[in-house]
Image (cartoon, rainbow, N blue to C red; front, side):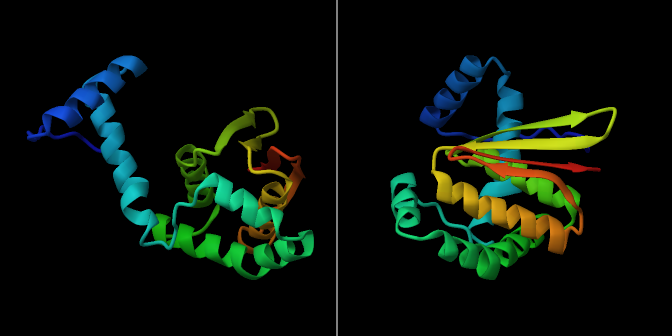
Length: 176
């Protein structure tokens, strides 16, 4: 991390009151909270629209996926999803290899209100395991399972040790 600099801002009273309240609720100081907000803007918010990403309401996405069969999910993930993900990550992270991919994935999972995740590293074997949790159903899991498989095989050229999914989880692991 680079050094810091002292800067003075005029912030709308209502906005600063909300940020102060949230920093107290989260039990972090206002300076740290402000840095997190600005970092989030720089790492994600200012880039996502320019990278081609749009927000979509969960009920709309769930309904769209409900109307698509598994074969169409496979086609979508294979013909558009993998390359779109590669392009988005390359734009937002300036390159597409393992570290930028994982950094982007974790940012996306943090920003995505439908998802939670855990990342564990087995120190003895150096195996990374990710568990992605969501509430979008089996077809969302299938879509992401296919994309992860393609990204690791074709773009990162790194074998997955495990790739599994349920209606609410996608799990994958790899050795670093």
